[in-house]
Length: 597
Image (cartoon, one colour):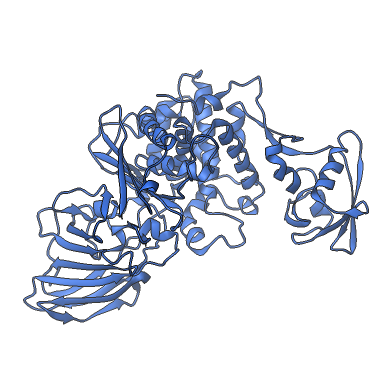
């Protein structure tokens, strides 16, 4: 039976030409491939499951002008009727090489192009090779070899972790994004273990490609703090690829030997203020994935092809633990102050609280449903795709505090990281793991804890409230009380969920808590509060009235939608979420985020 020539490290390589010379002027990349073949039926596939995306979103819709030829003659093809990512053809008799060509037309302004496609401005481009190839159906991405060539506009430079060897495996090619541009600068980041680390910056101007001294200092600290956390690298070199531009969407994605990061020019600040938490966490989060997600990868996400179905079952480790460790490195490296991070953790409690979906959907089930939630949208926002990140993060905070408590402060999750993610650096290898192996590593770190039961109770349980035990064990329990901090003035003027059971914005109810005063009175999202005790309603008036009810009951008479009346007798004062130190528990939270190197 005719078949594709066997593909291995010793077989003739597939040649790939990525012609990006018109990427900025016409927003197109021209692609040519030459496949070693034998005559007969052949199916070529465009990648569907892009590593790191956790969903089948390969941008096949952007592939246009597809054609095949052999010996200069066109070869007919058709798309597989059951798989829109597959293309079927018959290789003519006597043919030893098949040529394929297509154009890739990126969707301008689409955030996802940063992660798995092509995004360009007049002076720079983010190019993901994962969007620019076809592969024989069933070919193992670890062994199939390609000989890639990239053509760029005149005067442009490139930065990538793609090896300079003549051929490279398909897996490594897809895992090696390319940043290119007219203005590109490289900055060496010293490492205590001698492994090369480089920050490569592209921007829309020469001046914009030079980060300030604060950012460079944080990047250098990130390299040294990661060594202290994990105890080993699993790459030959590492490139932090950073685009500083306001002409592309902000986004990031992990890779084994590099990270994709696109941010606004001043998104990381200059050390004199506090940057946005998402901005500050982007580089550390994607960097941690080199250990958690790339080197150690759940079996369900370690496919041999980019088109086989994958399982996101352990995403609460892949993303949840990475979110936790990334935020730790973010603070230890100086990107974000500890006090602001502590407030961020509190805000996550409020964001996650009261999700109705958590009464019937566990975190494990949310992880399994992630491809649907992420690609189909959040529906009525019962469950957000980021919940797997942030709710899992709070559980891993608990695990860290628990290890510290039960070991008499001698051990921590850092010790687990060195055990599970450490070892010998053999370059960018992948070591898949199961949940049982995860439990074994936790058990080896703290034998007295039943980790299998702990994982089951945290990730298979149903609880309408966000997990708070980690913060309690870390010495910063939540309490409800009055807030006088000017920085939280907006909260105090919109958030009445713990007193009356609603959130209000410019008089309109935007959230109602189940079983609250508001719910029992029949108030609904969308209602407008027009009067309070006969006066025109304002959030400031309501806050001041509630504060007066600290020691005596206060009548609250609302006019709703300019018509009906709703009355409460309220006692208890202002009730807003606070994190406060307790003298009975060590301040483990501060210790967790303390610099180690």
